[in-house]
Length: 150
Image (cartoon, rainbow, N blue to C red; front, side, top):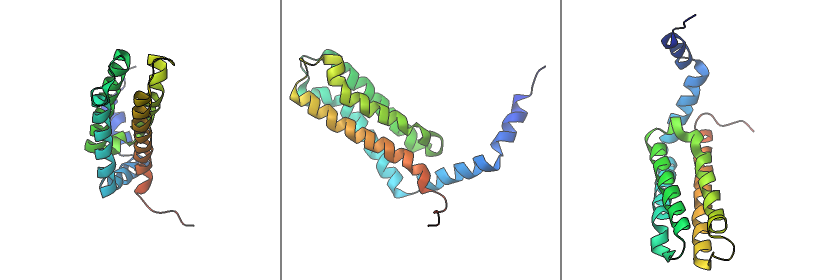
């Protein structure tokens, strides 16, 4: 039995709960704080991508590749937050996951003996910033809409 997928899609698109949720995210994305968070997330991703050359990870080719790939992924994710926040606000957990990986990467990739202070400090700071920005992005969905009564 064939189903008409356009018919079922139009029903879900007009569902009142979905419309209210999109309205709340649209309201949150119109606030200046959302632009600040998106911009900082983009800059964090770009810095993460170039950090091996800025800080000088000379003997850690695996860590350089990891920082480059995760930095580009975070920057692309931030561009998604900036363009359609109401569709990507749920992906804030990805920024948190990238941040956690960035913190753990010096030991996971380079090993306990190979990691040096500048690689650990750089990745810990950038990973912490990425986690904080990811959590802030996830919190943007709660900014829109009515405030709860106390």
